[in-house]
Image (cartoon, rainbow, N blue to C red; front, side, top):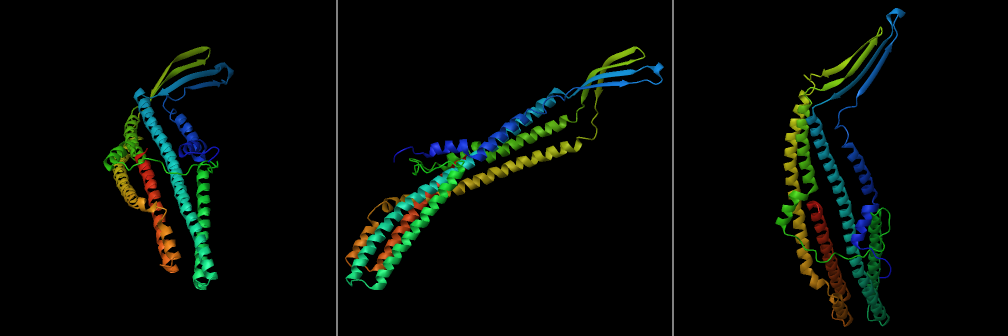
Length: 378
């Protein structure tokens, strides 16, 4: 190949830069980072000034000036800041999870293109063989060696194989466009279509050990338990009094009064049910975490079994299916007259369907590995 060619690694980097959903989520996360720094400080101070005219004039005018600041105990702001930081970390994880899902989708489209490309190679060979067969049948028909129905079957067979190739090319173009869409509309025509080398199926126990620490759904559920615990503490602190302090002055009849202002709120009923609600949500978050761990583990084992089955089928068929002599022997037998044309079609159909099955098992193996990677969180 000449010119610049994309590898899967460069394509994934391009998707990270150009995918519109990834870009939008990055902007959203910036806004959430700013949101996490709000509401964790005392409210703004309040300044009031009143000027009142006296009537009759002998009373004089009255002026009032007041500066007040309300605040809670320092532990309240610390607890709220801790809860919002956990919420931000959870949102970071959600964005990372979404990005991995997009990249995983790109991997699936890439593996599908590799599979279709390999299938196209097989179909091109099949078209070539059917064309040669048609030429042989044409000469045989001209020499009265083959009947008209046998010759027509060869023509129909060649046309069917050509149609199958055209459908495959259309399918390849569809998946290229899907991959291009994931890449933000940037062309993927120069991508090198080949499976990664030396990728083996990991041991199930090692994957199960990783999934507890890395799976995004499990980590998000774990963050939920931490957030709910912080929420219980925060609601309990909401039951503590709010304090208020400030300065106040008053001027009337050429006399000025000034001094300090203090106040306290007495929460009696407002937060009782909020604390109860927070405690119930904390219990629910623990149960939800256990549920997520169970579901993820079961799904992991299912995907692992699919990957193992695909790999075993692929490995058993590899040596046979990569031989280039499979269909050649059938054509030689047909040429020397040892098998009939219907028998030849049956054998060739069986051979090519077996090759398609082999290629599909190979593709399913890599897609299953991609699913495992997504579940583990790598």
